[in-house]
Amino acid sequence: YRLLEATMHTEKILIERYGPYLTLEQLAELLHREPQSLRTSLRLESHALAPLARMRRKVGRRMYFRATDVADFMENQHT
Image 1: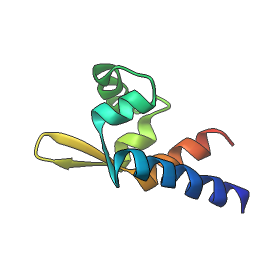
Image 2: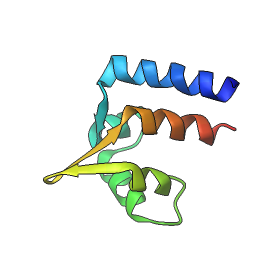
Image 3: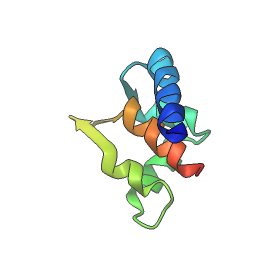
């Protein structure tokens, strides 16, 4: 129950700050990474950020990540 509550709180904060979808650049900022470094990490299956790669949505050449998925990923990394 606490994890669900924490995830919902994190999701609310992300949506207020970035909207329902984060761009790759916004996610990089959130994770304190350079966008190119994040892009490289997302390509590596063995990297800790690999789950985020499976959550991405592509529109043309742009990558987007749902705030809901990012919040869930962030909270599950801390358990």
